[in-house]
Length: 322
Image (cartoon, rainbow, N blue to C red; front, top):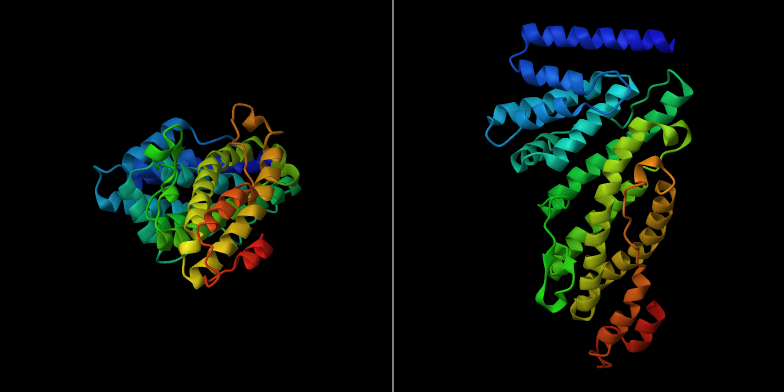
């Protein structure tokens, strides 16, 4: 049955390439998408991904960008094969990571019209391993959808953000969240925490754990998790510094963000311990995770600047909150 499926998949791929050569107005792009997302169980070939990146660069017409998104969405919605679905998601992920900012804007605009990835109900039940891989693909799709939502909230891509060296901490570089004002910080940190929740959710199970193609995609998520964690960490430091100047409602929200950061640090540590056992992580340098409780002393020292007993939060109440 496996050999028959491979042969049938190869036939479908060659047929689609042939049709693209004859019927498509975007012939080169359609051929590159089919070849990058074919039924062969290996990562998309770099030359095909590069052609897609070139076709969606800033010097191309806006219509080309829209068509590429449409073609990838159509490819994903029509397939019942887990390999094709996963390779399509990998191409989408690569475009979001490495693509031109104009392409990301177009992707956001396209996604605002409805579900672009069509992955929530995806399943390939041709075998037990395909079933396990399908479950992972759904989790990966959720991560990519959350990545888009985070991009919409932050209005910048955390993966391409340049870390900044600030004068007061000249020995270190920091994320943008380190200096955000309170309103923006309280908007962006929950979005980043939700994205980190989706990161931890892509831990594979069953046959998916040992699959090389899934490990390739997992490596892309793992690389992004490092910056996501750093942005949340810098945001928490910023949050602690501003806590006692916040209005009461904002302070309640800030405390909820702080508590969730503690739970997420523990979950992320377990996720990293799992990933360290995989082949994909041999060359990775994992960050040292800091539990938010290490900011407790900073929080207490900040509170010393607000000794007024008439203040919104008494010192006794603060000690209980710790």
